[in-house]
Image (cartoon, rainbow, N blue to C red):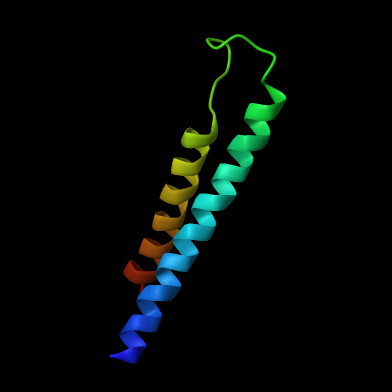
Length: 67
């Protein structure tokens, strides 16, 4: 039971790190593009955070699904 809890905790921590790294990239991109008009900015914090999270999920799925 403890092993399953630790495994789930590690998975959640890895996904949280992926989400935070994506958010940091989004913050940096948003900060550098703050002078542009709202229609000229391409992607911000939410977009980069979601892409980071999806990348983390893809990495975890590849670990589980590959032999």
